[in-house]
Length: 332
Image (cartoon, rainbow, N blue to C red; front, side, top):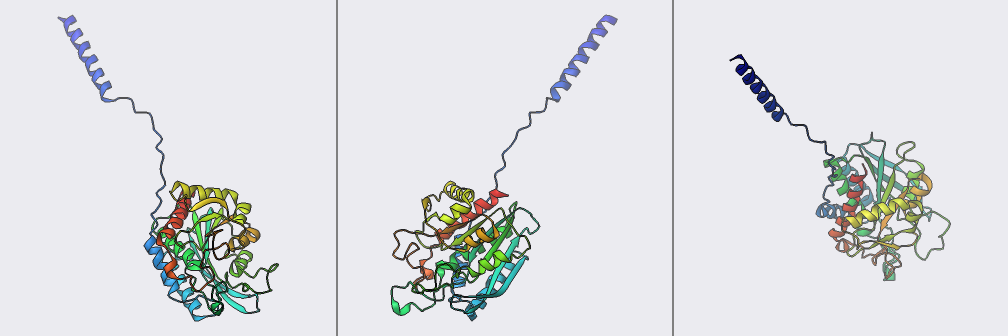
């Protein structure tokens, strides 16, 4: 009888241990899950509204009331998206001796972040339509819907997206002033003098923060015309080849390869030139260049009275703006 009880006891013990083992299986091997960066969707209609708002002021020429009113609008709009906005005001001398009152508008996102990216565009418009096909109109101010307002409109929408979902990197957006107050086409005052990009030259020598630097910069200029193409501008390739590759490759991955083409676009003396040369931040220029244009190498209505709002295609604003967002949010 005792032996029987002993075997029953052993059987119960083994059964209980077996059940407990089944109840606690070995934990699974840890798996690495690749986290994809959530990139916001660029709103083309919103960006187009920001372009329209600038154009509604009229030509934004330094020393005019329209220029001052637009500056108030731009600074106020950026303050809706970040409290860290600086207006860098000063005076520069133009090619004809005119003293221009300029205002560079600088908005910072995550200002305490050491790793930063610089985005920029010029917000002033040309004081004369010196490329207009009608000689009688060549002293008329330019509306600058594409040449000026388009790049700024894209960056205001980028700022709006940054305010809704912060990327993992600091971003500075600069609207440069007095970029387009250079000598007229038929002027003898030309090469050897840096009469273009006066606002960016000033900022490059006097940044809004001492010792300011960034991983890289992206300049937008004339990015809104229907059917625009963006070949690789040569100063960008010289000073910032890796950034050129990064942005163009990202545009192709996003499905915009037909607009961001790998052809050489020639040298353009734009705001990015001074950021590279003086500030030594590798900066590229996304700019509409067309070797078949009826107006030099730029889009057909460059520096004419026809650079108006009807030339702006919201989809092109989306193409450029979404590319910029893809680069920023995957950088941090």
